[in-house]
Image (tube, rainbow, N blue to C red):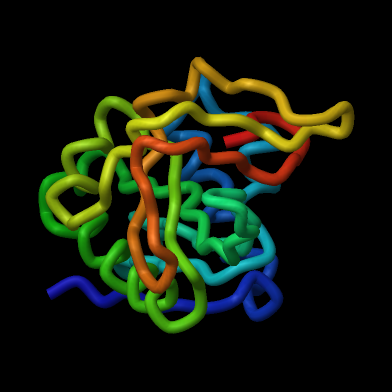
Length: 177
């Protein structure tokens, strides 16, 4: 059985943060940036260790998404990664179960931007693909993020959602979603 440990970024030591960063760079290779790493910080991390080696990481951070005339407190999932030789063993599902519990208890909804490889996992866990147009609330105003359409998933918690409506994320450096 895989044991998932959770901790806030503030409670992780330097060695754990270094291991998490290295795992993400190893898993995502050329797609990982410093901004992507920064997006993982400041929330709750789900970590899976095998001995003294980190083999799984995921995080949920707080963001604001605009939908249906409301600013929704959102648990946004970032940095879901499992070491390549440990995949298909339930590690990602176990980490997501922990983070979904956090989302249910603390947020209006959950959201994430999925890769093609990750979409099946999220759908199997009850995450719903956003069908409407996506936007970002940029410093210069609301900007369309059409490249993200079809890759955003939500995990309904308390907020009523129209999956075909507009969904706007708050601004951040790097990828908005």
